[in-house]
Image (cartoon, rainbow, N blue to C red; front, side, top):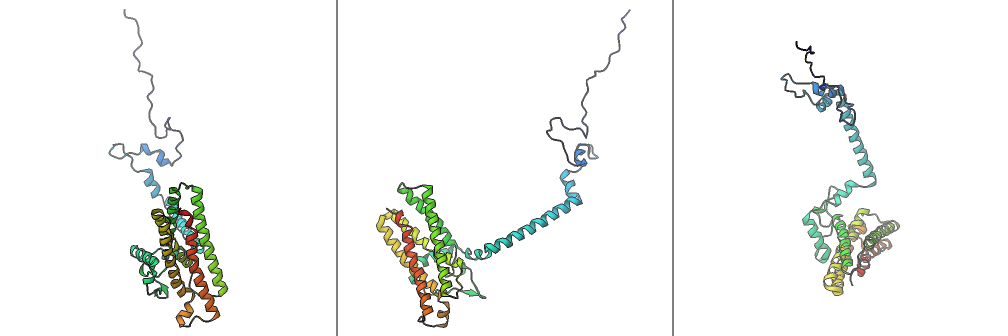
Length: 302
């Protein structure tokens, strides 16, 4: 007789079944998204291929509440940008600064030629259109900030090059060179504004115009230092002397039309006491440029 044995039974090892709501054991954080995103794996197309019916991003954008939130956020961003623009224009005239940087290559070339050879220029009047001065790229006599800004940066770089060739370069010394140049420029602007106030000059000369006109001297300073590096003291003094005379003539002929605008427009000879003061002020501003050009560059050439 055969021994009685129990019938064969199936294996009791459990096979994990993926459920829509079951979390991944390797997931570090719980999924706190909406119920639609939790049931993402259960939604299938009628074809049975297993692809999701719609992405969570599309469902989020289709939600009316989400659309309203996005529209409200865009409105807040636009209002914040408008508020920032108004406050910036209150303290920093951005719209006016754009005018002083409206230059092109032709203007820069003509302006540099005017700075080095002002003796050949005849018409120094600034052109106007509807009581507004035209952009610098259309008038070589108009002041700009592009050339002074680039000239200042180039002057600092050339000063660092000169100090490096003499084994005297250091970041502190280069920073001192830049800060001293800015300090002298600031003192110049403040002194001229105070003098114009004391002399009671009615002029359209603005603070930005003064910064532009006073910044043109850096062009001659760059030329003097470069010639000093190439040809020594003789080249430095020759080129810097030429640039000093040129900037003196340029400032006289430019500021004369700004500070003496009333007398020049009416054809009144400069004989009165007030006009004499204006003329002296113009000559003092022009004469200060060569002095500062020498003071800020003589120690860079040895």
